[in-house]
Amino acid sequence: VISGGIDMTHKANKDVEPLSEASPTAADAARTKRLVAELRAVGAFEGEEQDRTRARAMVDIEGLVREWVESVYRRSEVPIPQEGGERRVMLMVPFGSYCLGVHSGDSDIDVLAIVPKHVTRQAFLAELEPILRQHPSVGTLHVVPESFVPVIKLVWDGVDIDLSCACLPLEAIPYPLDLTDSDFLKDLRDPKDVTCLNGPRVTYEILRRVRDVEAFRTVLRCIKMWARRRGIYSNIVGFPGGVAWAIMAAYVCQLYPHMDASMLIDKFFFLYKNWNFESPVKIASIDECRAPQGAAYMAQWSQNAIVRAMQIITPTYPVANATFNSCRSTVAVVKLEIEKAYGITQNVFLGKDHYSSLFTPVDFFQRYANYVAVECSAEDEASLKPCYAYLESQIRKLVERLESEYGVSLAHPCTEHFGPRRA
Image (cartoon, rainbow, N blue to C red; front, side):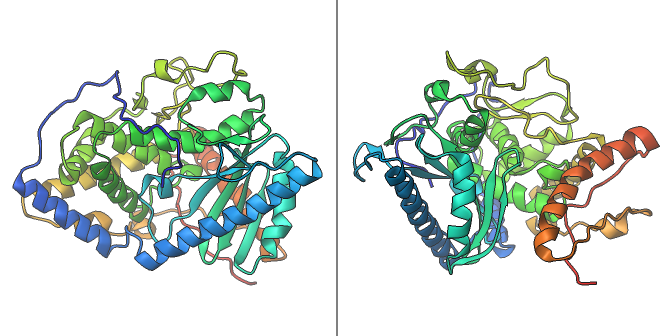
């Protein structure tokens, strides 16, 4: 799902030379066919009816947000641009897994509303909340104004939506708007707007940096499902999240540009089982991610930054470490799981195993002798959500303290939560 006006021309990573130009054989193609069949069997693809529900949700939410933005125009006594022309009231831009084309039935939709200068982020969060809450299609709704990307989290007809907002200093939004062009960022003075826009910008750049998008999508579907099943998919507790796994998959596609998905999966696990994750994974040269001239200063990752346990670097300005939350323990767990997965893919090539073995659920509660449970309690479920969200964000700090202050050699955070339950 790519918004109009986006330049999706392929761009090579000038810091990387392919390690192999090999193409798939008939046996490789047959393995890829079996891989896709297994991915369908384990739910890595969304059904047609679910896909239609998502599409309807996007249209309905866009209409509701547009009506509200138009009301702001009227209050501000600013002429409303005529729809269909080169100036729009607002734009709704999906990003993340839905835009990458790798969403499954339980995926959420990340969507950014790009609005003109008459609309403030504070008004967006405060005024849209009651409007959305009263809509019959909306289930749960929670506003998170203090997060890194301020967001309205809601469920619309059973679809989880994360709705954020970026404000451009313009009377109306130009259309088409090429978000891959960094020049339009130079007029932004609120760092939060740049941060919010980085969601779709990173998504588009990942797609532009791979030659065979369909092979990349199959690989990423596989990696996401494997990481979820093995309990190593959660940025907030210190494991790679969706963006980091996508960058890692894209980098492998750059090294082996003509291989198909089954070959790339094997190369993925081979490459990263030997990787020193303090060495950054980059799919674009840092030189290509410079701030546009005149842009407000924003801190970003550099080669001289403090080295984290894992460094997966985003491919647009401002560049950032997508695995900043990682620590020694989470990287050790990831490496262990990658090594196990490589053994499975090698056996698949030898005809001794099946891809289904990649997706065996993790045996977290049989693996260790000692566990620490963190409980969160509140008077009601509405009060519990912000409390739980805060506690979840602190788990990685608990892990780091266990490592540094108590000499724990490995503290493996669980990516699941249990509850809520009534007392």
